Image 1 (cartoon, helix red, strand yellow):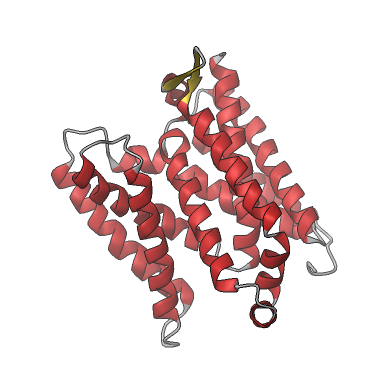
Image 2 (cartoon, helix red, strand yellow):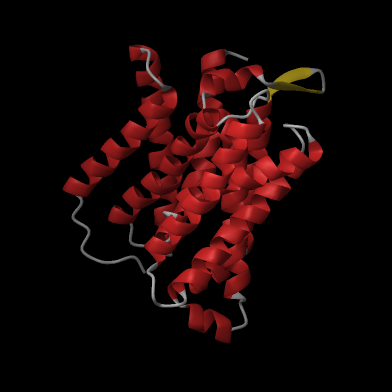
Length: 281
């Protein structure tokens, strides 16, 4: 498979997965919780690595998911005290758990392919070289995981669309209708965690957070329905990818950085020209 085409495919798959979930995070006003999760799951990965001694073990995903849900729980626990706002609670939990992870990485994993820079920044150029043989074909591992995660996210959204929509806009009503808003909330956080974990090696945390927040926030400026917001979010995610990758190769700069900058520029352009007069309903 052509290298440049593979990079486009990987980035687009991740952008769609993140853009879809980002819509619900933006509407729930917890988009920055994504940033916290993307950092604190590193501690879960490290602890799981200490147990299994394998960097490619599926148990690393389990450990990361546990710490992701722990992050959500701790943030809600602290913010529910009413003495500290949610943004402060996110900062406290993220800095505490991530600092522990950084200490463990720097002290005990010096001789392994596991470092903070690769997790945060990522390098999508190398992703096409990590392949897996399927039916005699060498397919990049990131393409495989990207397709699987995208299918998982889409399946959940399609099956529980009504429940998610009501839970976001009226949690009390959702509870009275027996739609289990708590289950929906933690399921979304689990999907965010899985998406973040599978994005680590390919694009890094920085671009993952940009994909999760940027396209959805841009879509919110011009959307008047939830379905429209999802479609616009996907569109802006793909558009940013196509332009960003092209610019990166043209000027020989970081692909992740270029895409993130394009996401920000598109948001600013839409922000200044948007004339939306009604809120999302």
